Image (cartoon, rainbow, N blue to C red):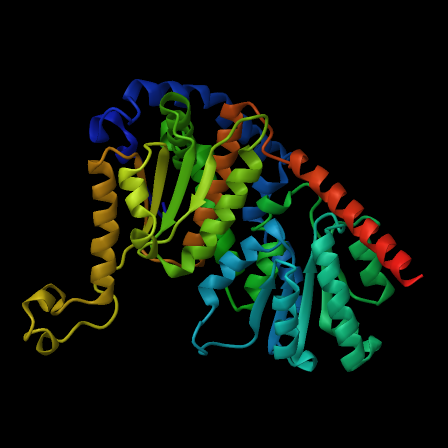
Amino acid sequence: MLYRHDISGCMLDRIGAIGLGAGELAAVLHRLRPSLDKLRQAHKSGSERLLALPARRDDLAALQPVAAAFRRFEHVVVLGTGGSSLGGQTLYALAERRFGRGEKPRLYFMDNIDPDTFEELLETLDLARTGVIAISKSGGTAETLMQFLVLLQRLSDRLGGGALAQHCVALTEATSNPLRRLAERHGIPCLEHDPEIGGRFSVLSNTGMLPAMIAGLDAIAVRRGAEQVLRATLAAEVAREAAPVVGAAAMMGLAEHRSLKVSVLMPYADRLAPFGLWYRQLWAESLGKEGKGTTPVRALGTVDQHSQLQLYLDGPADKALTLVMVDQAGRGERVSPELTVADPELAYLAGRSMGDLLEAEQVATAESLMQRGRPTRVIRLAKLDEERLGALFMHFLLETLMAADLLGISPFGQPAVEHGKVLARRHLGAMGKERAQSTA
């Protein structure tokens, strides 16, 4: 496996009363046997498109010319929100160089509609050297449509309407929807968003792969990592041998038997900070239904050792924690002993690297949480690359599907959110009427 998955810190014999008993875990795993069988059947029949993605390569070949065309730009603006953005952001974090190094283009993921932020971006970019990708599965996402309309106008004013087709691409379902119609009116190419794959499950599809390829990442390696986790899960003779199934059993078992209703994901790598946001949406929107689910919280080590760890250690015992660690020992420059010799309180840093300190702190955090009786799962990576990130994506996608089965809900759709969208459009319409009346 491309990662090590350890739930021993969630068990009663390791952390005490709030942990799961071996019998309780076994009972939850037994309930997941039909879910694992259902997963195998869906993969074999091809009825679940998400499960077919890891093995595909033809669609990536078809994306190559689009990615190559966008790599000629200095800047690429990716418009989208939620699942249309977070997967791409997480992948791009592997390639992004924060301090000016690295290849062009630079990608900007605009997933909000704060007008100040958007105006600042437009003032910064040279639009003649900027490409735009608009992503919306339904084609009716109001935020993405607003962003795209504003950018189309700016591009048209600056470069002329004929340039839109060379600078833009839309990614949406092959239906007559607002985004597709808008793109077609301006001759803008449209890529098809698979209608069978929901936005928050789409990271391995073209919504995540296209930005990754533009950034110069190996999309095949991402899928290869996902495929390894999927195949290992499908090949498991018993549920206990499949890491995503064990993860779902542990997290849902703690929620069911110990009333732990908060699920904290805390990676110890800056490049995994967006992964925490991707996980948060996946878990919240998939499981938060019918009064069920647990609340996902994203933290980041070591930063949140100084802001949230006090709560995790000494606050309410209502959390199950997952620490994602990358092997860090020996990485980075070592501190010269000559710089520490004059101060005994610096002696512990002499000859150590920054990676040594990060390694020590991530291990110490896990140990301190367990010693305080806080359920703590550890996922450990030897290094962070495309293949291992693909493995993490698939692990949590499968874990979410399994958790939904345990809760007896569908992981797809977000019905409660739709009412808010209707109200927003109603308020926007009312604003237009008020403006018309005031100018009459």
